[in-house]
Image (cartoon, rainbow, N blue to C red; front, side, top):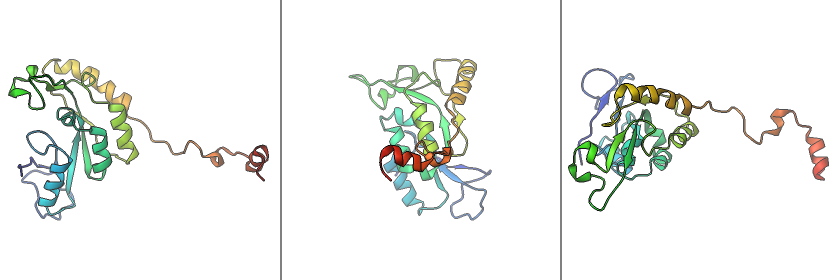
Length: 192
């Protein structure tokens, strides 16, 4: 099993069996660490299913590996405690695939892009995270070899703001909440 980069919410080494509530261990799936849900599950098992074993979700890594980044949320939403908003593209050719022949970043089929210039559908990602009640940070992470970081930040911040949605407190078919006369509705429908 590959070693995983562990991030700790407090300085110092990541806790192995710590009971300190402020410390959280997380792992970000990427080609250099864990690569997908299966490798996360191996890591989780190796960590003894520790309650602080969690995921820093970054859809860009899944784009570069051709993994379904929305379905990943369905499987692992309870482990997602942090969220990197970063874009990527994957344009495989007859010569390059996921590892892109280890070429320089600008020549790779799988590479990071500025937010909005890659293949991540953030409408789906934000909606899916909202569906599961995600309420932590969405951190813009820029790693593009094409666009200047200041321009990327100017474009990226409004892009993220546009995708953050307020959860509804109603269901679309909640007629009782609008004060409908149920007897009148039954009469109209012919069901008394």
